[in-house]
Image (tube, rainbow, N blue to C red):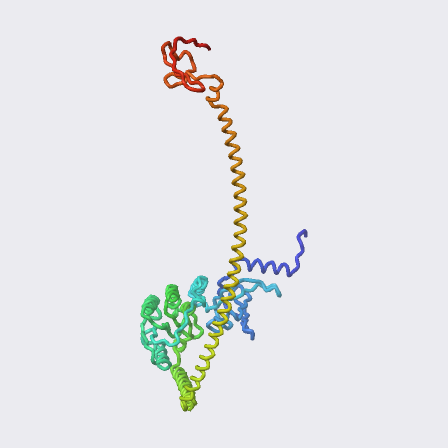
Length: 444
């Protein structure tokens, strides 16, 4: 024995976890006969499901079995849906049942549970989508069988509770071939007729009888309707897909009529109470205003109005006198403040003028000194330039015995430019000499 030795609890828990994790052992449908059926005070059911060759222990908790529409007993053949698990306390295989139906309707029950789960997963049963019912419905749509007990119950109940409402009937088949299609058409038509509320009802019956109300298309139509829908299908233990998707489910047709309408006697009582309260409030207000009127009528102002006028006139005169005094006082005070302000302003202006005069004299003196200094610098610069110009002046050169020879208005710098007989103008320091070229001798 080389394998690890396991504790019993470890082995049982391992088997339990493997079974509960296996999708093939969850939500299984099993058919068998009930035996050893027990119902405990907690509401839970415990029983054995068996056939001719095997059996399995089962448990169905109160949260699930309250939806079972019949009373199970030993010997009943049923179809159950549940999850395979292991009861660790005894190490026994067990089936945790979540739904149960007599086996004669197994196929319909399977379809019902499958559609119910599908629509629930899509959110068609969510409470957040339920529309509130109107408090005072005046236009009530009724979709049910023609001349049925359910129709009579609704008509009687609405007539007794809320006779002021108008009932609009749309008779349909409530079971059998074509019934689902008729119900769908009726609900679409009623939704377009501006109803305040629509009642979809029929009496009790088997699951086959109620099957038209488990129609998927009908469920989607009810979900998308703008008008609130109240269902009352079958008996209290009967639940159809239409019940889950409607805005309010009633256990019976009569219950649907009661849930959809107020009690006119209660409304009358409430209105009577409101009326009495309004009359009481009105009378209290009348007495209050009458008392105020009497107080005003006997007031001194109405008994002796001249006195009120004289008192008001005296107060007005007194206020006017005080106002004149205050105005005169304020005027005198303002004149004093203005005079002080003028004197202060004059002093400030004179002081500012004196400061600016001193500043101006200083600026003039500085400007004069700057101008004289600038003039001296410019004069010296000009003198230097005159001396430089004089030094380079041609006249200065001529004063040293040099002369400038010109021919045709141009200074002659090359003897080769002249030929014998050309006239010349010779400039000397003092005057000009006119001459004629006899010969030239050009030197490099």
